[in-house]
Length: 326
Image 1 (cartoon, helix red, strand yellow):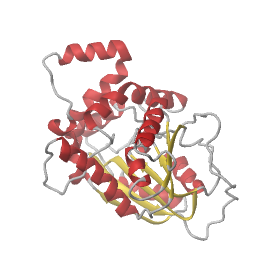
Image 2: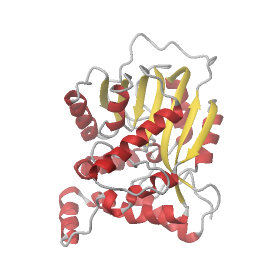
Image 3: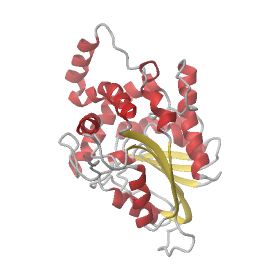
Image 4: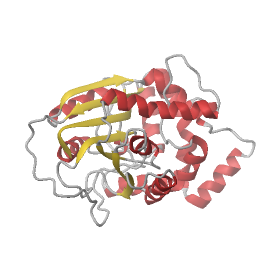
């Protein structure tokens, strides 16, 4: 069975329904992710064969993934960066801090944007990092506004990935860099069992579909990007779902706790708890993969005038594609 890169599953409908579902999921799980995973709501990165350790090592691994993507994509110091699906701002604050970048972060979740702005202010980085509730495909920024477009674990929430790459091309200045880290799926055929696991992951994580790393490369090339490449980091990140790392523990009162959460926040919150075992199974079979994609907007690309300032639109407009998590 071939991986479906275009369909949407019932719990993650395409169009405005998908955006609303993504927003609701991250609004209701914000504190869970932050309490358990800390600054970064994304995978950790280890050398192949390394095992997760204590909390300090867990946080170091998520920090490292950001550094690995910076190095792989070649994000320059001082760049103006759009962070698509900024989450609570972990990667953006690294870009704004050690790299001295100016970062605009966008997410469908108002709660995430508010928390990211709080964290930027606490870190003394509010002048270089700001966060807004915005749709990735209807963001209100002028053409050629950014030196880099950064998307860490957000593209899986966007149904129309062709439109995403076209929008990235529009937003980048000539010579600008597109840097993506994403959950993905093995290119080609999946077995029926593998397809069922992937479908469950998509349903519980409010994602319309997975694309393979190869498909991401094809889409970037079709959009006009050059220097397109990808790297498979599956072996480096799979331990993120090892129970002691993910910190999603089976408590004695686990079922009662989940019932209480579902009653208080809605059933969508339960996807948080189903993710670990499903992702471990997906990685173990090779059906689920993870990697980075790099692409460059050609230096000679014609663009419309970018305007004198980079400002988000005054209101959040939701289209059939979005991003919520970092």
